[in-house]
Length: 319
Ligand SMILES: Nc1ncnc2c1ncn2[C@@H]1O[C@H](COP(=O)(O)OP(=O)(O)O)[C@@H](O)[C@H]1O
Ligand SMILES: [Mg+2]
Image 1 (cartoon, helix red, strand yellow):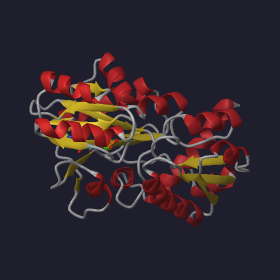
Image 2: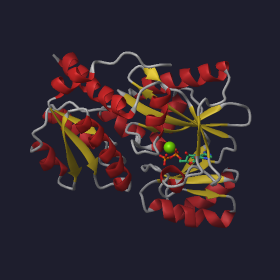
Image 3: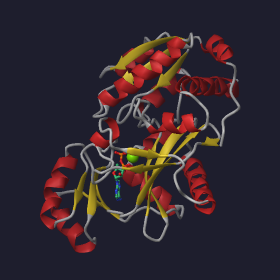
Image 4: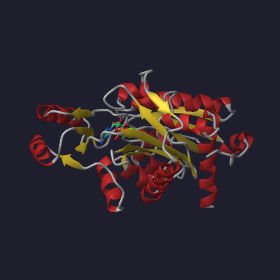
């Protein structure tokens, strides 16, 4: 799974022109995005790219109209940046950008829609129910087995999520998640967690995640030093091939572009259940895509330059 098709860095720098690195934004993942953005910007500038920071605010349309950039490195996470909105503005302005397009971002930012789409295509995902009101909590308890995980449908970074093991925990969990919009209950899967990153046409080495926390929560993601990121992931050849094919199907079904990451739980039968598809994964020093890229022989700067290179391809395709 090594990575050998790279354009010389100097060529990328020369062809890229002025690069706006979009970060921050107004989603709950603002802080994570600012950290990702700082690392990306530093790597681009170190490589000699004429890159600059744009902290996206409420008036994003105006900001992008006035951008004066040849292309965009989009490292916004969450709503407003990873959900098709920014992508649509950039399409209209005809500015090439890193990552998936409008439709793929809009669908995958919505966990319910993603699950329904993937289920419709025959892929496995844990059982789930949308919770539209407090009253629905009763229905959930009548039709699903505990434990559950309660999730905001349109968030990332494990924000607003709770594991529910007792009936009385459900309403408070719903209330917490509902601060972020639509909510769903998902069957808690006891098993191993794997995450799979990809870059261009390459599926990067799989990572097994282990945490002493109940699950891979915000703290385990960005602060804790006791989260284990395990490469090689311990799956045998056959299992790896199954997971690889699954990820290729997800890329195809969701129409993903350039890069991304999908998260899976493996149940007691050894079946992989997809739980999350990300179009703009984290690029912090604790993040999974840079770790997986490193396993494939690509350092952080090469990863960032590869993403920039992919925006050059888009331009060529359009001509
Ligand atoms: N159905 C589930 N069963 C067990 N753990 C889960 C389940 N869904 C999510 N988790 C845990 O919660 C974490 C965050 O969930 P995920 O759906 O990936 O949302 P996010 O978009 O916040 O990353 C996962 O990495 C995993 O550790
Ligand atoms: Mg996730």
